[in-house]
Image (cartoon, rainbow, N blue to C red; front, top):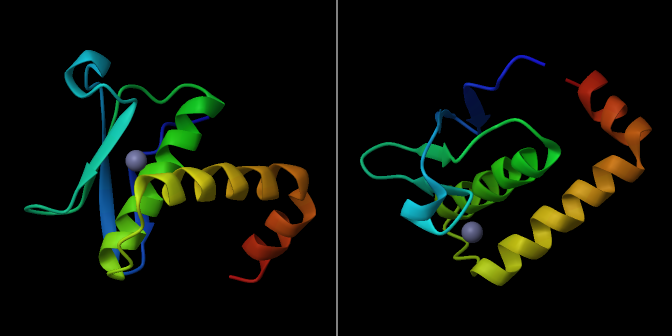
Length: 99
Ligand SMILES: [Zn+2]
């Protein structure tokens, strides 16, 4: 699979920067909106990393929509949405076909 270089989140094309050191952040990923939206990942090579990408995307959605989701809610949503999509592949295919 080709690496994902950006995520379209609403009107924002958010670049993905891969290669931050986990020790620098204590996390596998982080995101910022200052000065521009950006997602930073330690790496992007496994399902775990895609879950991190989803996690950081939820943080940005929370920022863009002024939801103020706390970390625990973002974690719950990334796990729940991952499980929803993994256990309902026909649902995911249907969503993609509706575009
Ligand atoms: Zn987080």
